[in-house]
Length: 319
Image (cartoon, rainbow, N blue to C red; front, side, top):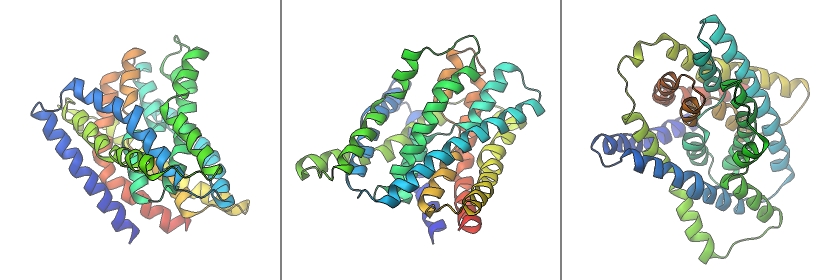
């Protein structure tokens, strides 16, 4: 039943992606508008989605315990995928500027524009989004420190820029949401309804952005690139499948408890398609931005099939 739900949700989101791609192809969504949508989602609608979802949650010991487990497993998952990405890049004898992109894209997924909408749709009520936000904070902490160092050994991130990247509107929304949740503060309807309604637009705006991004990608010859297929296989099937097995064994050996939603969020977030912002970082640090664009395009398309498969694996192996 849940497999049908995830397939349905991906199809529904996929329809909006197609609309976004068509709008970009016809000139309705321009490059400037696309970047404007990305800024709107990151700075306004997503923080409101996080905030409004948290206020609907009741703080419980189970929620906190599972949240701690999500943080631990998220760090383990990201560092494991960094290692598999580095191993894969060496096997393929990639040039340094291409290897760094391959490693980064193996470890970091499109959490903001695909992960959050999908987790909120799959696990309504705020719990899924709570765990997804914890994974996002972990991912951010690694990407803006170790990740930037991987992209360029010549450009070390200074403390100010690192803190600035970590302290963004979504982090602030998380902190405020936690405070409201722990204080059991319910926002009055006159405030809650518009904030929640605007936050819910994140799902569709994010998909429009992805559609616009895919439509403006030069796909000539991209499907002939073997390295892109290998990345897709490793990032979205092989590595997450290994993580499911390893984490299941870890929980059983140490007699640790973790509910299905929290475990599923970790695996699905780890298996999301390549992070789009790495294309921008690649240009900044003189890495292979063409390879980065190819990765984002192909993995986003393949995720229509791989994410339902991963969810099925979680249910079949872990629970």
